[in-house]
Image 1 (cartoon, one colour):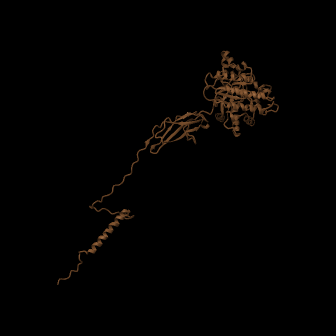
Image 2: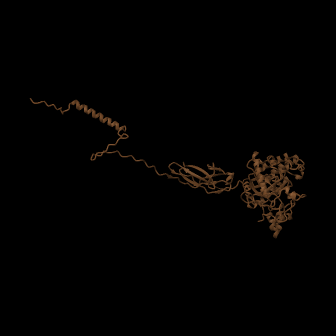
Image 3: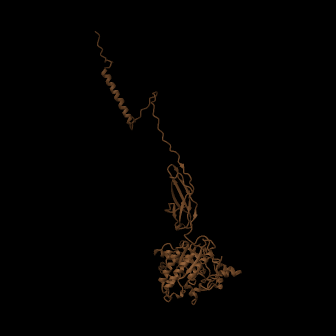
Length: 495
């Protein structure tokens, strides 16, 4: 009998085959799930399996590439901006574009510059030009931004900022009529005398209008006066002084004004205002207004009705301030006359709120430097009292060799201050002679101002005018050829 074969049978049973097939299916399924969940990556710290040399390379998926954004475009029509408006301190200017930048949805921002440096807070298309940038070059820089476009920056041309001064610009008219006598004397003179008289006659001067011109004729006189000076040029500046609150002269101030006189004052002012109309005028309103204040010396004659007269002056200030091109300065005495404490209530009652500012030195002879300091103090005191932004002008017709009231009487104990002696030579000091000619160059080097005074002048002074009249006897009448030649011959400002 053959020996039994004890080796296991190599023929698998049907159950075993089925079981193995099920296991294989499960393994494949689990592997696929693991791969889908990212479980096929090599665990941290384990070595990645290496490809056996000669083994077939498994196909790999293509690596995705990042999309490249398109290059930014350039904005179109980015022309430089322009500045519209009067480039003057206190005035409003605007940045305008010759053409709108494209696309229209571009965002524009603004930065105003003074001498190339940004002005703090000046980031809108409109700008009220600050006082502090007077004299600087003003420009505006515009920046355009839009997603997908290159940022564009354009800058306007620079424009010099003028001071806030209505007297600047265009011609200052010169009076060539018979009043005051100076121009006829010049016309009839020759040689040296003609040259000397020309130092007065050819300068812009304020002509005084007073109660000697009746209410019935004043309108026509003023209208003709303006026409004769402007010669058809509406921008020519005409200068005048209104001296009307003393119908019986200053010596009659001890007598109150009657109701009829008060009514006549208002009617007279109305006629003058109507005659001025749209003409360009610089006006000194009521020289010697300080006589309405309490006198410095108890012995001086007091005005009988200061409140009534100041109310009339206020009427005039308001009436003239309504004229579109008339600049009004209320008389405010001089650095050697009334104190600031007296001037503030006086000017307040006279209508300082309604006008440009005040005038100094109409009938006195103090220096420009002293009046700059005094005027600055007064302007600041007015601001503190609720009247900000006031400017002033200074008379320079007769302060070429300046002196105060006290200095005059120390030199001439029995003299007449209103008719101060003219200088006898160019070397004499503290005497009456022509000062610096009319100008808006308030820091002229010939004035020898300190740095502080020059800065104050730039901020507060509109100009140096001639509303004093040293060529007249007692600064009023009549014309004196001798005085005229003396003050012209001895002036240090002849050049």
